[in-house]
Image (cartoon, rainbow, N blue to C red; front, side):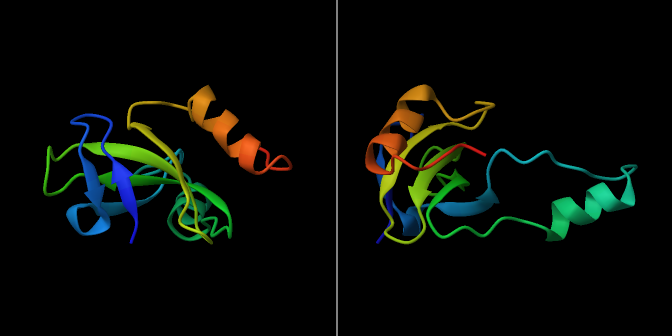
Length: 106
């Protein structure tokens, strides 16, 4: 079972207490955007085996959205951080690189 720490309320929550929100750090496109940009946003997503950045909501807790870095193959969690963060924090990137030296932030 996936267990994540909510960076807002500090609760260590099982995935049954959370709601997944898809890939993190996307540039979102909506009404009025170029058709190609909107299509890429809606349908051309990464689906990596390995390190992935995701959005999660602490649905049965504080209700806030946050971001998590984890490995999709092993469920290893590298850390969580507030949703308003534009890029993964340096300490989380360092944890990922310590476990996977060849990994690059793309």
